[in-house]
Image (cartoon, rainbow, N blue to C red):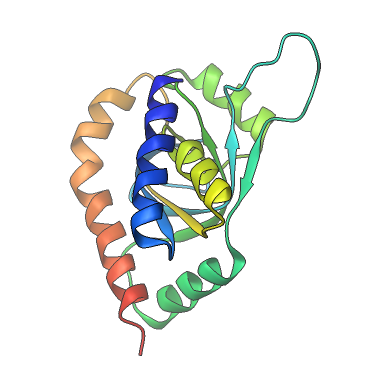
Length: 174
């Protein structure tokens, strides 16, 4: 919860300064077989998976990705050749390290997410609060299983390079 709150507060400050859009960028663990290490996931929706209510039942908080931003990203990806795949779908976000296959399966079933990361819901909530489009992009570093800590360290540089390349193509559209 603390990291999400920090992400929310920092995002509010950054959004107030730029007032155009916000990006949540980083690493993630895959929750689906078709999403491989090195791929990028663009959030069509960010699902706050660790939001727990004890007195009432409600759906988990969700924050929609901006369709116009996602379309522009898709067009930029399609124009350029890349050594990775770009997936569009839900991303689970919460203050929990997912390092067991059993928990990853449960989380995938509960959220329908393609991958899981940490701070996305804080940024998405701040964007909604500020009325600013949000883009969450995650480079898949691991499979959210027992080898996640080692895989994360080994694959982070490649994944961040993929995100940088995609952002470069998107921001430098013809």
